[in-house]
Image (cartoon, rainbow, N blue to C red; front, side, top):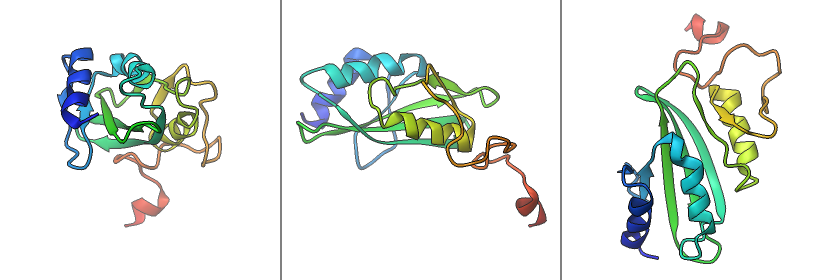
Length: 151
């Protein structure tokens, strides 16, 4: 499926989708509330068959936390990037996609551990790198610890 066709599929499914900033892959900014529905459709639709999540990244930006999903197909030669923006930096939350792609379980745990992004209905949302008693989220721009305070 060509970029134009993928764009049509996503814009039909989510008319409020905005184009993203990626120059490498077609990227769409979608409302967080629609993420799971859109992801499920893109995975199960025989025309898109985006059956492989190869990257999920969390970012701390000025306008909120961004969660970026890179999806590809093992059947077709196309890649799509979905981005959700979580404006609430106090309690950032988005639905899990771990029921669609098993790899998301670990990617989401990493985003939770390092940024504090919560993934609703995640089967095992707990720290993956840091100790359970670690205070704070080290990839947040407002994070302070003894090392960063000394600089």
